[in-house]
Image (spheres, one colour):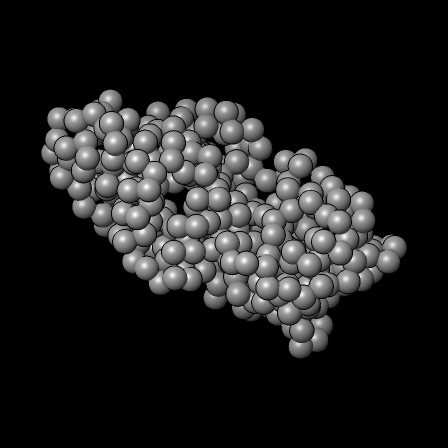
Length: 334
């Protein structure tokens, strides 16, 4: 669906679809290998189906990657921040999935999808007028970021600003521009941005500052932002982070709703976990499932990070459970 630098399978994995196509199939054309962690028991064989559902991360393996606006501190007037917070208040994960569906599946433009959402959710209503002036909203080079940037444009225009959206690319490009004030606002993800600023200041081996607790993550994010002239609006309830999906048919057959259910009922030889090649070693992927949930798959299928290979493996019955992103448009398809 998209490629972006984010914490997809570890603290700072730079994940692109191209990168995950290498290393597949070393132990056979399917790229399926026995995992390092041994599995005993029968497990749960894959069940094909068109609908994908996410299993609840009930023990909070993943950190909180809630969507929120990152703002150049010099541009952060109360009215500008309040307008951006209107967008945060309107967004949750289910709505973000629907927005992504509108673009990635229905093929609407980000501008059209954002306007339809803003009109339906009152994003422009009751917005206080600010001092005005030009505002550039930066966006990363994937559709979800562009969608949210367009929502920010709508809210800020209602507050009296002259707004343009500029797609810039990766965080390594747009974050320095935000610090310098070359752009004033960009959509961000709380845990990913917190770790980006943390490692930028303290080195790649810095102790992580993000957390499964949103308040702790945002506190760390704001502290890091204060040092470089960045501030942040209110986090939305929308999250785009690692998640583990199964087909609805698989969940129904084995009566699963949570990752604890998966571990209790499906650890064993028949269970196939799908994800990027790094997954077995990464603390937010297979290694984390073992450590936090004591889930042990029978085999691991080396595919991509939440991309078409993994989703296709689930739908065709080649994988039992796979790594996806929690706001993936495919999760809206019935």
